[in-house]
Length: 223
Image 1: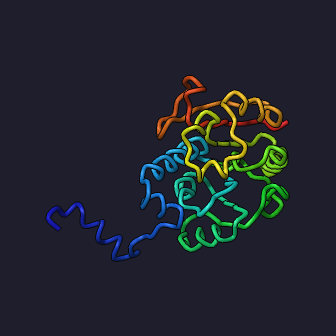
Image 2: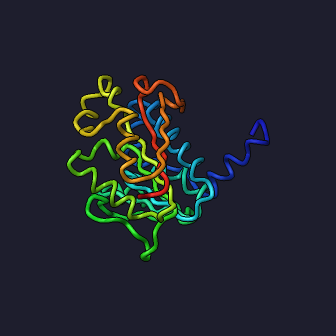
Image 3: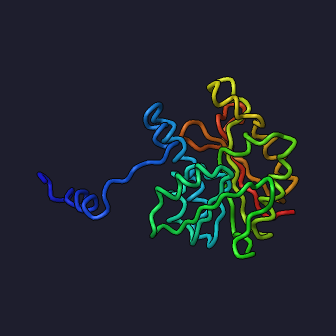
């Protein structure tokens, strides 16, 4: 090495080998790298909000790539998805010393409990917009029933306003997008306190809702 401070890079590769990315992350990197940035930025926000929580549930983890941002910040992370192929990908690319476990589970069918214990917090990113409005109450009820009464739930999803710019592929799956105000009001049916944040690209803000591309709600004190 020309500069010795970089020797640790080669040492890590020598010890652990090179990391590979699961399917969705690989596709993002190959076709539109900025999508990877946006995804990681959303999960970084969740990681900061849930820093120090003992047990956390991720609802709809996909291939688990971004779960890596959450698990160092919490006591333990349990990540679920209804698609077995995604869970297989997540397990394949996970490391034994990461404090995360992956499970096939459909949150529309039942709450998810681990050893009959409620979680301290839960989060669900880029899931709600895929759930038909006729089933969204099952989603919210079962998530709420998976966490303690004073637990925290964070939901993130594309805004209704963003859909005019969405790709045709995205539009096929986005069947339940809401504007920020409606999203907040929806979750106020299940939680006493609901705080709304917006995001454009990787920038989080509390600006004018109709100009937000993505919305977050942080929900506490279940009803």
